Image 1: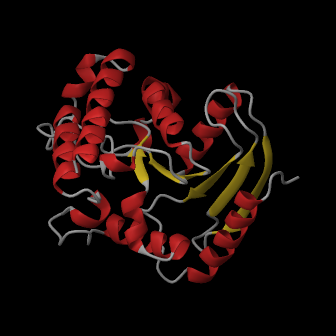
Image 2: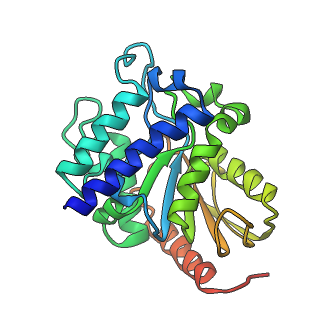
Length: 252
């Protein structure tokens, strides 16, 4: 337990320091949040989940600042080592883990990993930490403001797969990886069974200085609008191809 506490403290202090250095100290006082998973997940692992940014009304939730969020989740990580916001927190006045978004990401975990509890082991966070009413105001300029902290998470976890919730994170991460010299060696699209929406999986070559191996990026439509339930067959195909890409050294 002491070791976990020391690790969680290191994550908390690192976050505060990195945000001050790269995003500006004033960001800590803005409404928002960083992680959805325990600080114990910020270590080498197979997966990282990236969302766009925290939802909700930044005016009504002005008291819930990024600094407050960092401190709260540090305490939760110490009290309950496997704490996960998607499973254990109450959103929108529902029972813990029972808001629409939470139910959908838990079901996604069941389809991809065989169990919703797998979420407890996966580092999950936002690319942008500031809360907005919707994603219309989120652009690459704002992504860039937080990139150096996002980069730190990727370097620390060294995932073999990044799962993006939403199209913008998928496209942005490809742009950033290309700046490290990586190349997309394949991309496959899967019907999402929702209008003309698609899920996309790509594999990119080793980006020097970011991760030490080829990496797969999986795009899932944003779960605030995309219903996962009833689509197990689609996700079975996605999972099969995902496993093929992760196991192959190179795919043309």
